[in-house]
Image (cartoon, rainbow, N blue to C red; front, side, top):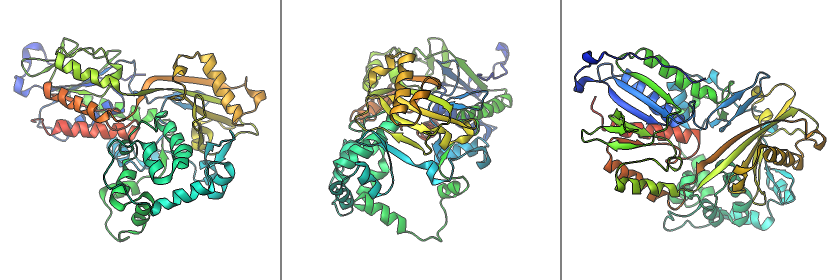
Length: 504
């Protein structure tokens, strides 16, 4: 259920002078980026009680907050994630957000430490699941050959690219460094599992910038990893980021109540701030998309032709707001440029049933190029048994992406049949049990964008819009990446940009 926020409004005749009134701020979108911006604004104002109050309004086209994040909580104890299953603890921006929200390590859960529960699989050329183990098991499975293994190991001695290749795709980068077999059988499935595909479109410097940095700094990936492992003194003082990581468990972090807990924590913190900030406050406008933006002669920004603000944060996906009216042809033209971003539609199918002899433990399985719609399967009962009733197997089947874009138009019956058939083919459930499964389907049309060769030009369009319409700030998964941590980092960057221009 969406939260209700109370706020105190001054009578019309008692409004303070313009220079002392609350700063009016609008946020378009109440996903992780929008909620984190609102939370950062509330902390900024709370730490400066003598500064101008803030009144924050979030516009949300849906009937709830959270964007792609959401958890179905069933009475049986089963929890089904709409999007992210968890967030890696290696992303310090996520850990900092948790601490800012007042959460502690006791509030998170991690996958089981037993390595058998964490086995990763890839569908082999034979169509069976192959465990990502040592070289011998990969050779036996057909995912790797001896020549391909030697080619990959030779990366240690392979010279670096003399000049950076800014538009080199992830697939081309890995093929250049490790060979085509590694790119095809490992990187392509990994990219499919994260972005729904696009290994041959997404730029390496956007997908995995740390790998590109290793080549630029150390001359190679393997060489860089080795040097980083053995460099530095173990007695040196920990950086703030390292100290933060030491306070939290490692691995893929989630919550006993599912990822929805993160959204609820944002809402609870904002409610507390609103109740203690009568001069300002916060307001959620659900089922209210932003349809027009206009810069007024007085320097403020008008939304939907009637709501006036001093600053606006845009966090919603631009390609899902193609009809947004900017009132000026030059701005409209720049906005139209953003519609060229390549996007993928994803379908999340949760299949659960009593465990049988075929139930597999492990993290999940990724699909190779030959898959005609299957992107991967997560073994939820093994990753987070806290989210699954005792004795139940829960598989999270990811479909669509660039493997089968037309899947977004399939019926629920077609989706269900395909998902269960895939699990049977992978020998994860018994064929005799195919009609005894409980199925939940979540659709995300045009949800995931790729940072391809046109990404930089699209970012320039955002800068030009800001130049034409000062007071607009852009943040969201279309800026930094599609993960939760990327959304939170984008929020921090967006907030810092605003903070540098505001006069308390």
